[in-house]
Amino acid sequence: MSRQAFFFDMDGTIFDSMPNHALAWEQVVSQHGLTFTRQDCFRQEGRTGIDVLEQLFLQKQAKGEPTEIDGLSPQQTMEHIKNIYAEKSRLFHSMGDTMPINGVTELLTFLHNKGNIDIWIVTGSAQQTLFDKLNTFFPNIFAPERMVTANDVIHGKPKPEPYLKAWERSGLDKKQCFVVENAPLGIMSGKAAGLYTYAVNTGPLTDNDLRQAGADMVVPDMTTLLHILEQTLIPL
Image 1 (cartoon, rainbow, N blue to C red):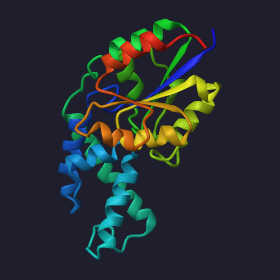
Image 2 (image 1 turned 60 degrees about the horizontal axis):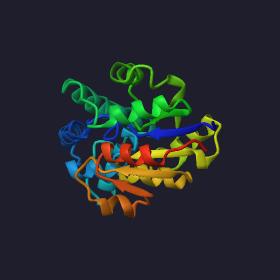
Image 3 (image 1 turned 180 degrees about the vertical axis):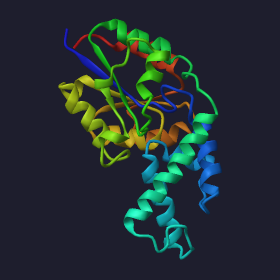
Image 4 (image 1 turned 135 degrees about the vertical axis):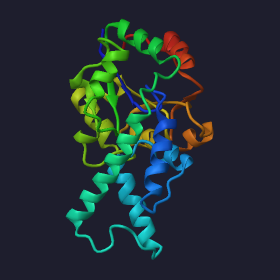
């Protein structure tokens, strides 16, 4: 049997973590004179945290409004941004563990049991404990060498680099690789990498938002995707 690979986003796709991420972002950035709403968080999901903060400061400066980074050197600016992101990360982790998305455990088990499918994580997260968290909820399904995180790329989603890196490391043809995403920027990244991309609508955005991002197929939940793959996923 030919091997295949499924590249999964993490937040909002594997774990139901986006509501806590949105709350943490909104609270922390407001303390630094920035605005980033819950809806903004879902629309920008997939970007690295550093990229999000850089864009927020640039947008405010473009409006001629004062910011905390005015007058700072590039090095000082990056250090300040990293400190804000660390604040956001601490608040997010203080909210406790988030549980897996409904139906994803069954989907991952099905793919794992096929025997010829490599399961990857491709995430904008830079959490140092990411693999331990995955292994706690999904023992023996993920492996550190099958993970692409914010620490592995220069240009995160929506750029194609994260999924291109996973594809290159997989050693497979693109037609043997599939992306599973829940957010527009992640979908754009998968499609820009030239990969077939499933969109699972686990958040507040519309199906049309996901289609406009370029998704090849939009489904309402993981259980629906599992049923589709049970009928269509055969060895190549």
